[in-house]
Amino acid sequence: MSVHLLALALILGLLSGCAAEPKLTMDRDTMTQRQKDSVLGTTKIPGASNIPRAQRAADSLSARSRALDTLQ
Image (cartoon, rainbow, N blue to C red; front, side, top):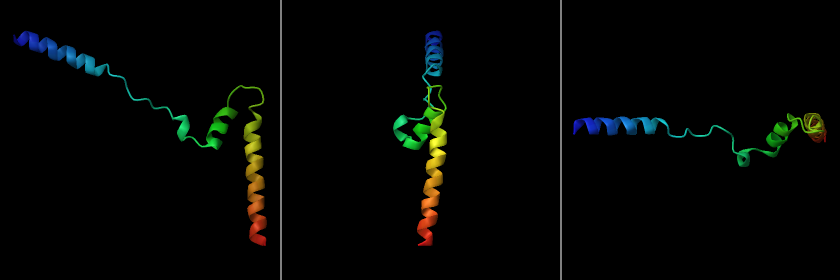
């Protein structure tokens, strides 16, 4: 009877080692729009290479606007 228990314990141990590991990917719903755009900008989709440049331009205009606001 102990041989059967040992075999059962061995099988259960092997099966528990085969359990699926948790996914380490980022859920799209937790990403900001800027992060989504950044990921999209790294793809080979036609025109996607313009996204990082557009983000830099938007950042520059935003910084300039903040600087002008502090002057007033």
